[in-house]
Length: 315
Ligand SMILES: NC(=O)c1ccc[n+]([C@@H]2O[C@H](COP(=O)([O-])OP(=O)(O)OC[C@H]3O[C@@H](n4cnc5c(N)ncnc54)[C@H](OP(=O)(O)O)[C@@H]3O)[C@@H](O)[C@H]2O)c1
Image 1: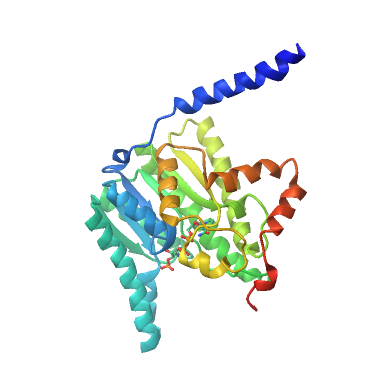
Image 2: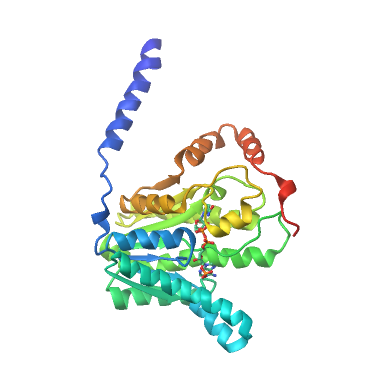
């Protein structure tokens, strides 16, 4: 009986795991052809790369960022020097749309506005309804600017970041849900290892990412109980080589970043296959998490060893 338990049960587990994973559908780019997708925070970084992948796959792509709103503010209030800089930012987002069209998107459009303002979230969803006639996938990816340093005690900043990184995700989900229910669609939430484990120097950011896990994992349970045919994919990302992340953390973090293009593709694959969670890169995210509940202090120590606090910029 002892031998049976030691050998047969693990082998049975492996066989079941193999059957489970091999019976899952494989990803094919054609799965996205003609699908109506919103990607938030797509002027730069991972969001921009997701827009290009979706365009190549022939999706209808609706991208968002603040740029045009910034531009209006600039035209109304600010001087010429800043105006030139902001014009450049707006042009960048328009270039994303142009490039999506050139890459083969069924259609590409931009809706601009700050996600700090909940009215923007409604407006965005209204545009999808009016111009695309519905929605198949909502990719929530934008992230507000924060600092990479010791927590500075600024409660107002935590509140602002919660609005941008968490509450706007909730508000967009609520507004888009009727359309997603009609299409049997998907919600993809871009989160971070900092939303699963306490990392130093990103206290406000980390709080917003943990909040996403709580909200969307609970909502997934309710969808399951109520047989709501809308999938929720939470994406747990490690360090990715986007311009903003590299500028903030490359000097302090002792790890090599993963490429944003591949990261963007993995997120789209996971969302399309309606996976519960996506881990990218798998080895540097999923494996450390196995330690979290059994050896939390060891994991904390390993995390701290990856940082060089003496290289933090003066606040
Ligand atoms: N890069 C990493 O190492 C890493 C690691 C783990 C998780 N992630 C997650 O991956 C996602 C993308 O990260 P990223 O590095 O690609 O970010 P990023 O390059 O900094 O891009 C952020 C995007 O969000 C938009 N945005 C910022 N503030 C906004 C606001 N108030 N309203 C609306 N849009 C706003 C930005 O456009 P505008 O400035 O034009 O508005 C931009 O398009 C985020 O959710 C992030 O937490 C990234």
